[in-house]
Image (cartoon, rainbow, N blue to C red):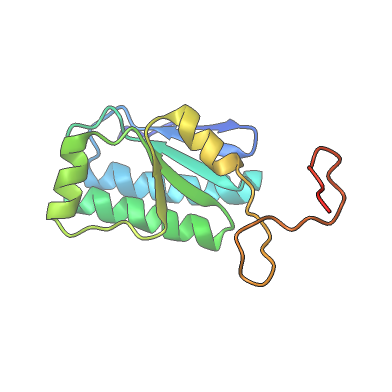
Length: 140
């Protein structure tokens, strides 16, 4: 049985699916990723599906399950390289992929995982200014 390689790049695991995702391969990928997240302590997983022409409902559910398992293990999942036909198929199948963020390519996926959440005060969306950032502009 073929396996999908999982590469570690900094604090991210990168999975580039270059083969047809048969059911057993998808299940093995889910297991492999969970083990690698625990072994490496990464906080991000990028799944590159740019080589996939078709994603069926089982593969779509497996991607959603991978994201759920990753989240439980303190890692966020980003799917990159989704072709328009794949996106349309997922929507037509009613698969919303909860917990899965998307980006157009690997570079944007890495940037998305690298963003830090902002701290909000009293519900506004501006980052808190505690005076610790010397590059911040302070107005009085």
